[in-house]
Length: 166
Length: 166
Length: 166
Image (tube, rainbow over the protein chains, first blue to last red):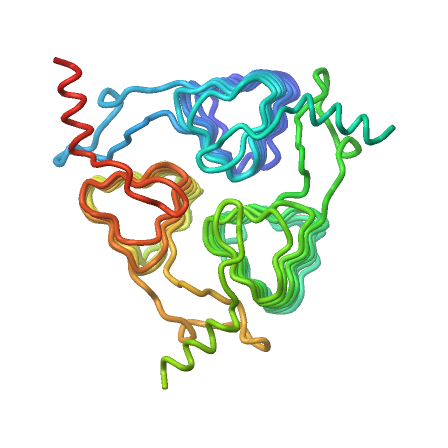
């Protein structure tokens, strides 16, 4: 079992393989589902009705609002210039500055994406699979590529599909 | 042990770390080898003589033919516009449409690649490491980049190497 | 426990979740820290004062010098044209050629990067998150993108920050 006692779990959270995750010191909202091989660090704040798919890493400083979808193998970041040591000893907690990331309600982050720190991903935004997101994403924007660029708007996609189906 | 009883295993399948995988409801052909931290979902169909390297995710709707090589940290996808909830409740099985993916005989998918859904990767094709593949790949094509583009042909590479060695 | 007895561990190595790693046949230097869901293969050589973050894969043929930082979900490679079988049987140890990779002292490899084989990453270099590194990286270079290209120098960054803080 690698869900530590210090995790604040909402009601009806599903962790599909409790022995194959590493979750500690975070808050997880009600009705959220979490896949295998997921790590969620201390201080992360996961909203209700989220899905965190397998192989993803959510670090300290990340907030996911309600209904966020995190695909498989997504990597969040909280340190822009990480380093291991100062030459003689390991760098520890006080030697770096945490940059926070906010993912707003109902945004989707495609599998294999990397989310640079210090940014906000807007409400209902769609991050295409395999993107590297390096700056703020507007609400409902579709972002793709390395680095990620806006390539569409989810509201237009929905209206287009509605037109097509008429 | 996280290889569920409902997996249909061929003869002589090797799962290097049975306690560190998450494999359920799929078929795995004879003589295939599977690394650590691999998830294979219900309904995936893995051929014989395949290698599935560590940290890879193979979802429902994916078929790998005979002799396919899947590198480390490869992410397959089966839902083009995933979402977590409709605002009030989690989306479940009936709320999305599965798009299938076929990887033909003896294709190789390099480590860290992301394979978008609804495509076919041709026989003997080579997907370069770190690619994001978004459309069909011809037989024997070498594909690289984000998004992946054809950059060569495996048959020419082989003949060139034979010439070089003369 | 998936840290095999044949691992040569230096003093004061920290493996945060010994039951959630797959480490065998390698050497790990003193004071190094290793996260969850990490695989390190036989023949890899990890220096002292390194940090290997969660979800990373370090293969045979990789040498990390002192103080290297490997982010989350980093994939190393040691075989340029991997394949699964020759059509009838699995390819095994003698059927491929290993290409080695060297990461020099105090280099940092950002999360989600893929490191192609046969290259050297220079001292103090910084590989941006989500990069695919396909050739040698000079000492102190900042490299980003797919494929990775030099976009700066860590020594200039440091001097610029010192100027700014004056």
